[in-house]
Image 1 (cartoon, helix red, strand yellow):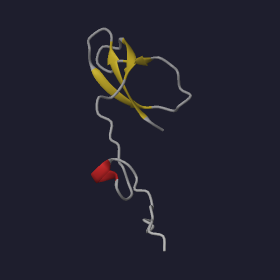
Image 2 (cartoon, one colour):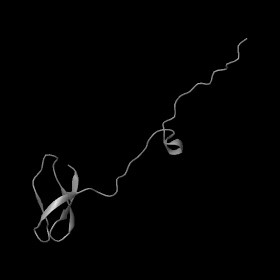
Image 3 (cartoon, rainbow, N blue to C red):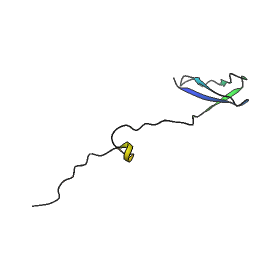
Image 4 (tube, rainbow, N blue to C red):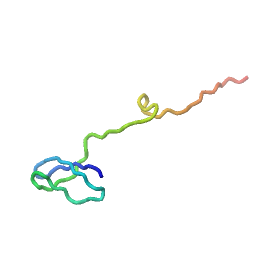
Length: 71
């Protein structure tokens, strides 16, 4: 279950709740019991894994260099 952040429309208090994906019920502020709305987190972490992401931000391709000289 994900953790959602809410902001109270009455007092501005920001709080978090662990909720199910299907739970669409209203959230209420734990301080003033005012109706709250869902906000999106400011920091989102991403991780690139594998070779080449750190240097070029792209995955390295396996390229074979062939000799183009003809005999």
